[in-house]
Length: 383
Image 1 (tube, helix red, strand yellow):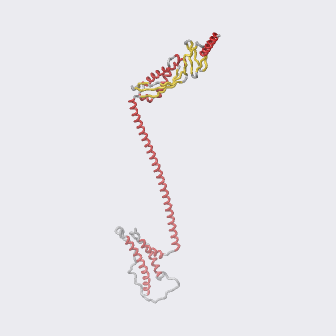
Image 2 (image 1 turned 120 degrees about the vertical axis):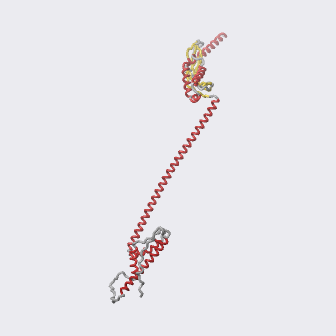
Image 3 (image 1 turned 30 degrees about the horizontal axis):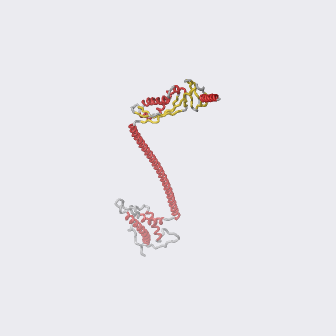
């Protein structure tokens, strides 16, 4: 009975071990490489897989996900014999697990060495400035060379990035000075450009302001000129209406020649008193005016111009003195009128001479109307 139990326990253990050897679970994005007696047999896909116990063996487990490998900085010499330190990152993915297992022993180390040699070849054909400014070009060339070289290993290089390119410290100091000078230069250029733009905008604003001011002045002058023109027109119209009214009033009053002559003589002193009147000329029409004034004075003295009515003069005796008396009376009336006119003219002449003494040397002496001869005038007849 005891022996049977021992055999049963051994069989159970063998069954358990056999099941453990024949069943294998593979994770997602992972491939298992199965070998039978040291030879590749198949690849296990993600999930539950059955193997022949004690015959098949899972040799490798390959991760099919994209992997990122960062390599330590490596010294590379540029074309101008400067040592730079380059730190790179490789993004790759295994697309053929069989080749990645049997074509290369350690593909990560192989990729690292290949990256370093490729970087030396690429950077060796560039100077320092090109190396610092052509990072994208270096990445693309490096990715192309690595992808072509690792294709036979079942590996695809997706991307290569240069994390840093560090020149020697002395070169870094020179570069910093150059960069500082470039920044100062750009700052000065930007400042000058800003000042130029500010000056242009300020000048444009002043131009617009001057244009608007000139337009406003123009419109103001036009309005003032228009207002002055309207004022002059209205003033001229008012003066014309005033002259017309005075003219109509004078003609409506029907003034005789004596009244006009009297008014003219009254205005002569006022005319002569003007500051600008240095030369006073008596018009030629004064004679006609004086004749009219003489007639008016004669009428005031009671001497009619002509006889009116039915009155008849009495017959006088043939007295030789009668014509002489009549002539003396008539001459006396005329002399009185002439004396009044002469006095008015004399006052006007005195006023004109007093105002025009300063310009007497340059201007001729004022012409005065001829006075009636005093010799012809006889003294008034005594009653």
